[in-house]
Image 1 (cartoon, helix red, strand yellow):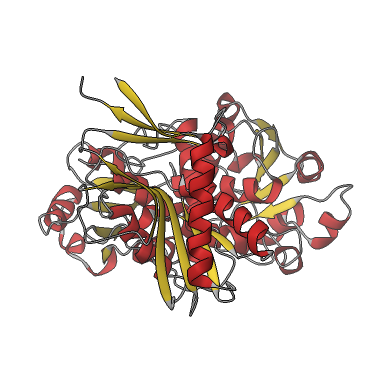
Image 2: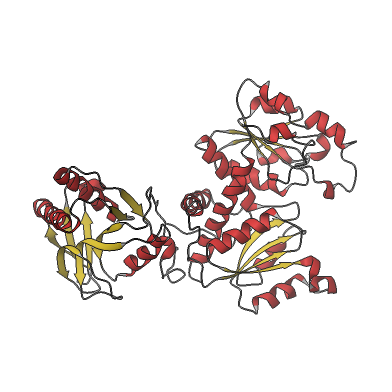
Length: 181
Length: 308
């Protein structure tokens, strides 16, 4: 197994700041915007983005956690049923500008399920997707991210591992792992 | 691991504590789902479930049907009263005929003990036991323990008294198995004629005096007097039963502590539970009903989710 560092703590900080600036550019005062972190791993990133945006704009943007497990299309196609996590959406999505956040964009299937899950809470005016890592050329569905931390060229057998301090790791690091060696 | 150790839910006796915990955690998620404006998720959209009820039931069947529909499963209902069973068809033939129409799961209630266990040896579909005779009623026990967990934070170490007709009750037996697995202390209380002879071998305390039982417990799970199963007289009259074992608001108010009152329904008001007790702040009977849907969604989701 080979591990290659894609992003370290300092670079991640710069990346997150850039993503926040891009969000500010598009959302202005964030009056009608909400953030949805995707369970299980997108929520840590969503929390950090919300915190950073609060420092930059002095605004508390509503933050929710969305679990798409029950909307997945691989039910009965895997050995064990996917384990669900908590969904916590304490605001109405109807008519809102939703910033959907996940750590890694791979096949796009989780995002598709999340779009379905989101509709259960109302009809958003617009949905944007923010990901930390976009694995290019691996998409199964026509889904693209609006805000990307870093594009990484990968092949199917590789894996992207995101370690964040908020998840209990010693430092923020993002790895590309080679399984075939 | 997020997988049950069994392909069927036949009883609480043969599932593990881990299984119960997994069902509870999954039910937490479904409880959130059924309180949304849109209460439906598409998980089981390519699954067909047959609800086969050889014995009458309103609440359990309704609860299963709602759980199935909220998971987007296709549902067919079958009750024995208007079927070929009356014409002499065997259980296995009936079920095989239903399965030949491409049914993936069977939810069955049957008057005979062990009927779902028998079926599980002969058919491929997943089976959920919705009550077999006086044996087990696993989803009821799961929702009872889940309701205790929700109300009191945990089941471990809690004292639960099961009161009433223990002899004929599948709810009592499944509850004893579930509560013991989750680490609760269990007592059964009722007239001696309605207590099975060797019940203490399951590791439960036996008490004949209801006042002592109520003073001891944190939770009183009051069972229905099953009038339809009293072929011989186990007690002189309903009035006498109610005088000795009926729970009233007055009795609850005179206790030194607050206890939780549960009932699997349907209540015989004025017999095992008075109206003022059933509708008091002690009672979590309607929470049990709501949790029943979430628990059944979790069971169906977990059983259907594993690839065959």
